Amino acid sequence: MTQPWLTVIMPIYNGRATLGTALSSLEGQSDGLEIIAVDQGSTDGSRELLEAACARLPIRIIDNPTGRSWTQNTNYGLREAAAKLITMLHQDDIWAPGRSALLKDISTEYPDVDLWIHGADIIDRKGKAVGRMCPPFGGSRRVLSFQEALSDLIVQNTMALPAVMFKRDAAINKGGLDEELWYTADWDLWLSLAKNGVGWDPTPAAAFRIHAESQTMTGSRDLQSFKRQLQIPIERHLEHLPIRLRKMARKRAEAANALNVCLASLHHRRLQGIGSALRAFVLLGPFEWRDFLKSSQIVNRLVPRLKLALKMGT
Image (cartoon, rainbow, N blue to C red):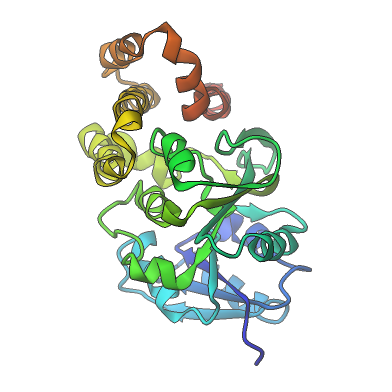
């Protein structure tokens, strides 16, 4: 078998409802790819769906019935990967046509970075585009310095998981995903890998699905745990910014976290954290509000979720 240039890691657990769509999005652009599906003992037919897809896609299925989380399953796939470049695809997300070619092109153009990011659509349960998720890096392909990238990325994770590619060796050297971070493990890893700069392309070449049963929705019921998940990556990586940028980045990140906790509370029909969110936003000051809204991408992230909440309420 020819050495693959890209490994796609898919942590799988009872995802049959959307898994077929995720796999279909890889068809026609899987040349040179290795797809590693790590199945955590699915009982809904996901395993059988993967087996059937092996006839048309270069899938290697790894059974991990004792797995505890998507992070552990992803790290398993990372260790097994044969390619030098890695991307992740969760069972409810999809690739856009041409993503494979875009990734090969951008990694060839910017070979010295460890992390490449592109834009992504946000889709609902039915696959309808309801928004856009991407960092505020502009409308043209380019390389960002670590300092420029971190100043925005530390405020809020605006990178859709299926819209990121990274070097396997760099991720292994960083220890892979932190398996204690059920919500922010990907953000934490991206911040680590940005040290050599970031390759950016605004093309929405993947789609991230939001729905009420996703872990990001259900896991935030424990607000204290959720808040801690948000704090840890900031505490780990903020110190790498120069002092002149660190103070404002911290204020923006703390305001974003307070807002995230408030929104999680409201999603679960509670009224906690509203005062803290308002206070953190006011303390930024009017001259910082515009930059905060840009870095956090709060409008682009909030509108699709409001649409979802309204649909749930009808």
